[in-house]
Image 1 (cartoon, helix red, strand yellow):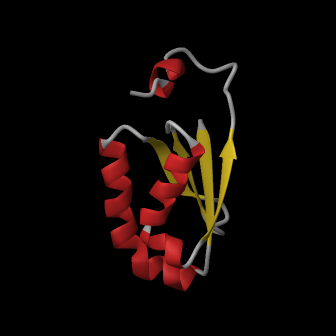
Image 2: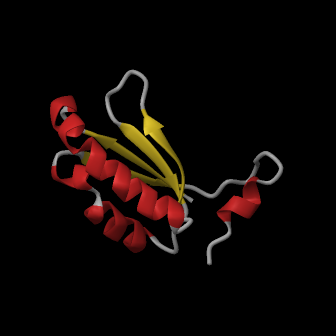
Length: 93
């Protein structure tokens, strides 16, 4: 399980928002992204994803139009407690 945190200048983010949404749609359709949205206050965004490896996550980040204007931080974690049904979402492949 990985959590991606991105932050960048809001005016640049707004310019790239439509392309970023298409990017998100691609990885939701592939079953990689589980949830995403802006931080509150809006200083960046968060994407919760599942991927085979950190290298796969880095490749995916490289495709994000925000990559040109945002700084990314990847947090990897192993959930050991969750709501019923959540573990099914975590299955990869």
